[in-house]
Amino acid sequence: MIEIRKREYLIEMYNLLYNHFGPQGWWPAETPFEVMVGAILTQNTAWTNVEKCIKNLKEKGFLSPKKLYNLPTDKLSELIRPSGYFKIKAQRLKEFIRFIFKEYKGDIDKMLKEDGLILREKLLGIKGIGEETADSILLYAANKPFFVVDTYTKRICSRHRLIDGDVSYKDLQRLFTENLDLDIYLYKEFHALIVKTGKLFCKKEPECKDCPLKIQKITNQSRFFS
Image (tube, rainbow, N blue to C red; front, side, top):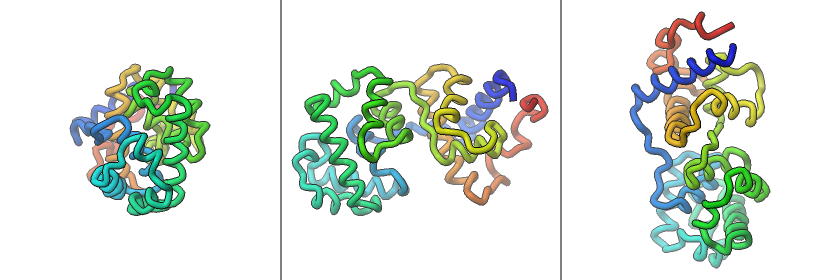
């Protein structure tokens, strides 16, 4: 597929999803730090489980860098038990908190002002934080233009023949960043809409009948494929 066709296809895909689902307003959080904690906790679990963990941390008064820094790991594990793999995630959260204090003296605002590419490299150096988690923090907490790629992104793009075979995270991310305007709102909404579509329709066993991206709804495919 030539690049201009990819761009047209992605824009039309976004419009179809947006018109069907409406604005998602993702990431649901009261503070940038809450986004960061949620991005780590949501690894390999449903968002409903993350919400339970966030609620636990808020009710106990621990949802701040300083409070989490001083909170024993075993107590943190219990508070985030609903997320699954809670002992591992507690260790990852503690590593992340230590990073904030080591690099930014616990100052979230200072962290968010860091250059995006530099911050991304630093985040990827933290044990347990991969590209998807790092980009989620960058896009949704720091409002920096890094498109988030996940399993749903890969599945949908593969089924709509936007990618071939097993592409890397970097290459799949480039598909969006090179064919869309550099727009943080667009990046947030598009990623959230892809997740919504993946959960409801583009599952491991696809349920295409009522999907807003059903092939008949996409403008004449012959225009988009070389």
